[in-house]
Image 1 (tube, rainbow, N blue to C red):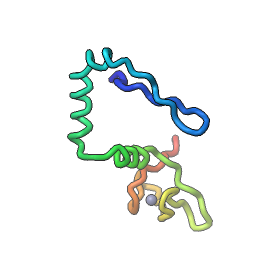
Image 2: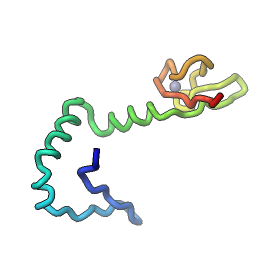
Image 3: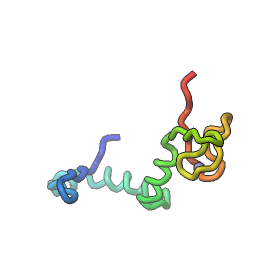
Image 4: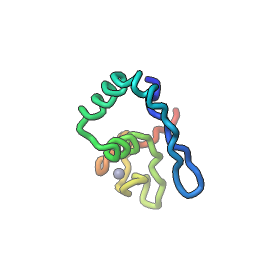
Length: 96
Ligand SMILES: [Zn+2]
């Protein structure tokens, strides 16, 4: 789906908001409404969604003296599991 909003630009010391053409926004009002509804129907905040996205992004378990551990919570990583039993982090999978 095409992005309906204009991302802010990173500048020194913060973010610069993009200038929005209100007439163009009005033309797309119902498309924006239905996309917003999908998000609101999740019942989640943007922070919760970003947390879930991060947890679902595979990360490689860390090798320690005691074996492989989860890079997020430090619990022991078992080779047959694709997710951490403690925090739910998806783990990076080795290519065969
Ligand atoms: Zn973990």
